[in-house]
Image 1 (cartoon, one colour):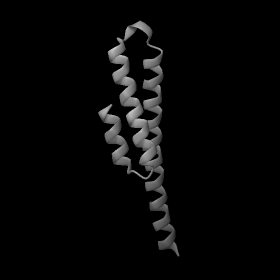
Image 2 (cartoon, helix red, strand yellow):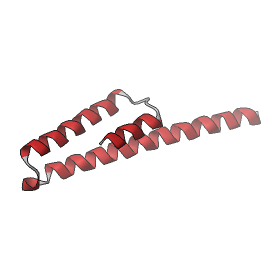
Image 3 (cartoon, helix red, strand yellow):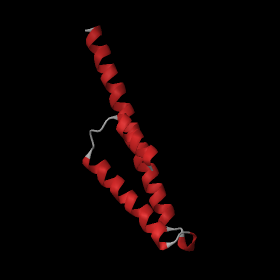
Image 4 (spheres, one colour):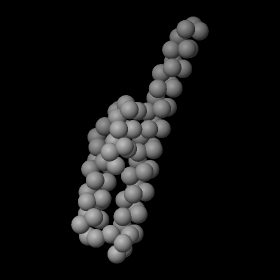
Length: 80
């Protein structure tokens, strides 16, 4: 019974880290998206479109990969 509890604890830890990775990426993407939308004249329309496109692409990836591993979320975060 103790071994089973330890196994579930490890699974919970992995799940918690995965969710934290997703939340970090999602939070960062929405922050960047909001900053780009509020940038006004500080960004050219080409730069703004590029940033917003990458944000939409990443949000779409997050929505389609809800079971991705923590490392995948971290990799996506580094790409941004």
